[in-house]
Length: 328
Image 1 (cartoon, rainbow, N blue to C red):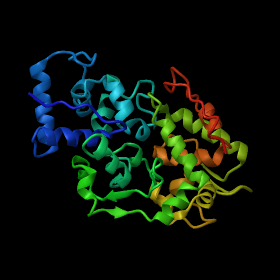
Image 2 (image 1 turned 30 degrees about the vertical axis):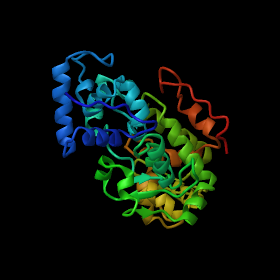
Image 3 (image 1 turned 45 degrees about the vertical axis):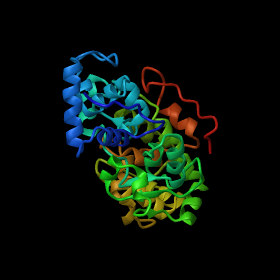
Image 4 (image 1 turned 120 degrees about the horizontal axis):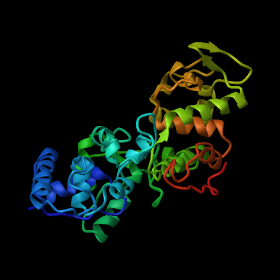
């Protein structure tokens, strides 16, 4: 038998795994996953609407969803960052993130972190201990570029080791790093950073990946309208307009920018940055979601325009998104 738990509001998957580990007296994540597999085979019933033959139901996320008595798609949608990290892909883009068709993505990328370290708000975990009798790791705090708790307007603290998710945040109150309050407030007041975070949250709500070929075509067409310098057939060609890397570099604080796209550590204004500026070529090379979002912020005037251009509609992106309050 296993002691099952319900996930807490906005709890990240690794935090839920850690609570299961601790309440069942396991010493490692491998041990709790072994126990979950044994329990799954022993019970043999369909608790979450998934057939036992479903490959997804036997993945780590599938087993966690079953223990939470949730459909796998619902668990992925509410408690993981998979849909953000895999927002743009050329591999099986037409299938929902939690489908058997995307089984390999579930297994290989399902529970990967979105940023180095584990982030938490001390005000949140203090309140959690009062309301839930325990503290836990929130998914929203793990978004790349997030330095301040949106609820308490307090700078986040963090632990460098990813294994920290298996313990409660309260265990690290006296042995963590704190983001500078000045830096956190400055970033929270920055319109570009807030637009980045808002778009990141919106991509978290899309149940299907965006076809990378479509995204590159849309972005290349927008580049053509604005006339940014680009590469064509591997040869860099200057234009009267600036470099994409220059535009991004000038719109965001350097320390924050490097934290979400480390390649910018090499950036010098006016100098072509291959890892960034080649993005405007019509190829299909893979880039992180962070970079797609930064590029879209520079290339499009509003977040509505980004969403409309990428055709995020039911049957393509998985939901209709209204961003009338996110312009600018």
